[in-house]
Each structure stands twice: as structure tokens, then as C-alpha cells.
Amino acid sequence: MNQRKTLAFLFPGQGSQSIGMLAELGERHAVVQKTFIEASAAMGEDLWALASDGPEALLNRTDHTQPIMLTAGVAVWRAWLEGGGVWPARMAGHSLGEYTALVCAGALGFAEAVALVRDRGRYMQAAVAEGEGGIAAVLGLDDDTIATVCADSAEGEVVEPVNFNAPGQVVIAGHAQAVERAIAAAKHAGAKRAMMLPMSVPAHCSLMAPAAEQLEQRLAKVEVSEPQVPIVHNVDVSTSGSPAAIKARLVDQVRSPVRWTECVRTLAAEGITETIECGPGRVLAGLNRRIDRQLDAQAIDNPDRLAEALNSMESP
Image (cartoon, rainbow, N blue to C red):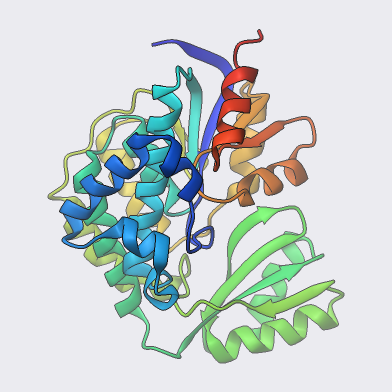
């Protein structure tokens, strides 16, 4: 394995999908559409058509978003390797992206992972009745203040920090009315912005306990191997690679916060100086620059960026 010791590959989660994503890459790199054909066979429907043409409502439904985002990340990873790209020293994924990282690191079979994350989406959708859950972004408050705001706003319901995305950029989730109260309290506490997000499933909070139970049963039937590259996990920022530990983390992850800021800082502490976001969009590259300005953060979601990143690896 040709590996670059200062490089980490990072895989985005839900929210980076859009109609027409990877269209240019798919035109120039046949492996992209081949990967979608493989995933479509596992899903029993045409995922490339959905990613290319929508409808948007179906693309954004979590039991479709998750397999499509996983497939997109794997497709870009395969295009990277086909272009002569080196292996990274570390991988990480944001929420659903952790499953993509496991596939690309050889710990999960691709077709099996597509079906697994489709079911994960179904479990998450079923855990909270339609209209009862809410998600919001809070900008400009420190983590401790947001935790206090959530605790003070719960009033017997659930509202919790669920994504620590970057300093001053946190997502909260829970019961919709509790999230609304927390938004008002966050603004009162000095938040620059606090607003509801157009998502109905309050992922990574304690309301996902039923989904975690179902996921644990489902994972018992899934074969997981030790990854070829250490993966920094969202839930505990560790890299232990035993299959049992990986499964336990995936169960915990669906009902626990994504500690992305800590994941990126851990990568930097372990000698990573370059990150490549592998999948649609450039959300993680932007977050990573906010977390650590010393990191070289690239994204490879179109042919030009892919070529540029491949060329940059030729220098020491």
C-alpha cells in the first residue's frame, strides 16, 4: 500500500447531497457510475437516476440519502485510487460518513453497507413520529453555553447538542418544541444565529434509542473486519479497530453527539497536515479550516479538484 503519512481522508454525511451531484465526475470517470450501478442492485432501485434527477423530496428522505451519500463517497474514493492516488494514514467520517470510511478502509463490504445504511435510515425515521422532532444550528456560542441552554430549555422534553462541527458551530436536536425554546434561549445568550434546519429526524440525540436497539440487532448479522487504515470514530474519538468495538461505536453513534471538532484536532495531533473530503460538496473542508487553520483542506467533488489533489500528492 502506497501511503502518505500526513494525509487523512474524510467522508461527509447527510446534508451534502444535491440533485446533479457528481455529474461531472461521473461523465469523466466511468468508475463513478459503475459504483452507483453496484449500489442500485443492492437497493433494488436506480440510485444514479435519483442523484441526477431527483425528485428532491425522495433524495432528502433519510433511507435514501444515507445509501446515496455512502455510494457517492465510495465512488469518489475509487476514482481517486484509479487515478493513482495514495492511501491516507487516517480516515474519518461525519455521522453517516463513518460507514463510508469503513467501506473504503476495507472493514465493511460495499453492497452490505448500502443495505445497512438504508435500514439505519428507516430505524431513525421510525424512532420519532413525523413532525415531533426538530434540528437547529447554533452559531457563535461555546459548547458549554449551548449545553446549559439545552438543559434549561428541555422542560421535561429532549433537546441536546448533537453535532460539535467546529468552534462556535453546533447543531442541537430533540423534540421540536424544546428545540424552538432552545433557539430563543440561545439568541438570548448571545448566539450570532440560531435557526431550525429543514430536517425532521433528530439524529444523534437520546430520542434515537429505539433506532440504536434495532441497529444493534441488525449489526449482529453484518461482517466487520479490521480496517486497513485507522478510523477516528465520532462517538469517542478513538481508533481501536476491533470488529466488536466498531459495531459498538456504530450503535452508540446514532444516539450520541458527533464530536467532529475533537476528531479533526486528534488527526492534527497525530501528524495529519492534509485532509481530503471524499464525496459530494465541501462542507467538511470548510469546517476543518475553522477547526485548524494549519490543515490543508481539499475536496475532490469534481474532475478538476480531483486532478488538482492527485497532482498535489506528487510533491513530498
